[in-house]
Length: 318
Figure (spheres, rainbow, N blue to C red):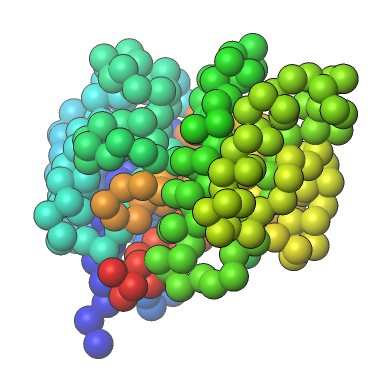
């Protein structure tokens, strides 16, 4: 039986991307489920192959650049941003043309991307632009837990002004449709409030009454099994105990803090709303340990396994 191809980018060459990709694709778990096609900088990969795989290359490689020999490890730079972006461009085109089942991306530096002229704050927004996807969402997974963010990489001071009824409804609908397409049935959703105690009847904030509760009513009317806004601590306890399949949170850390406490090594970032499945490990470039042979590839392995499993399910349901 032919194993599906997965497009995998090496991420920021100054971070741990090359290391965790090399380790992940050489693992028996990954070898069993897919045929990796690696996209990235030739010089950066060459350096990693010598260090981590004894110059073996047990995968297909597509060169997107060849300028990484002078990139300084452990620090953001314009050149690193150019290298990371070039791999994404080629890998997206490869997936869009149907040559790979799914896309898996190693971490990029938002600072490096900005230095290179990329106007988007991260993978999610860049991938949406490259695929002309109008509605996308950032969903984090950890085992059977799925959590979607209404807002993503914005300052805490701007969260409130970016929460709208429409965006809450879109985030839940995109997530539920993704899970249904992958074959999951009877999906139960828990909706987080923004404020402590979900606003406590507007004593502690107005967002629940003005935006979140109206979103709940629209979603509930559409037939989705969803709760009224709950305080985030209660929502997470119930989700961790298996009462809900999807938790919808209002901002980034409302998802990430809980998941990292549950199991940081198993977190996978999934972009939903794209024409193909895209995953990434739920951590960043780890500049502080780049090049030190200390990076844990567990989350990268999880991202690849998730992409292979859910990409196949999605295709079967199409």
